[in-house]
Length: 139
Image: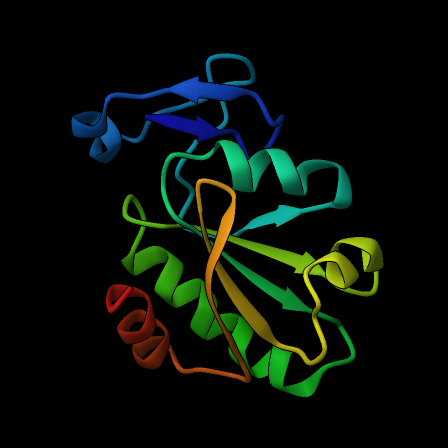
């Protein structure tokens, strides 16, 4: 399985049975499966989403958005609980509007589930950690 390093964007190959062994990047030695969502930019978004072997859930958010701020700890909690099954990431829509426009983000927070770089599902609005995990595990 391929995992993209959230720190340096290097693609690393990791055996599926070793995901629970806290793999690190072969290039920068950063953890590949952090228990916190990866922070994406316009430069890192496409490579991270398309080249990561796990399903990637991206939270499109903005700093001024109250529901985004309310959901942030819930998203982080789900990231800890589902580490190794999903890769969690966040993209600031104000800092990277071109990515947001390309993915037709009309309201925030919006969560998009990607598999192999292709959007598979999306939901808009704040979710609790329980609701988020239920939504992801049903896909």
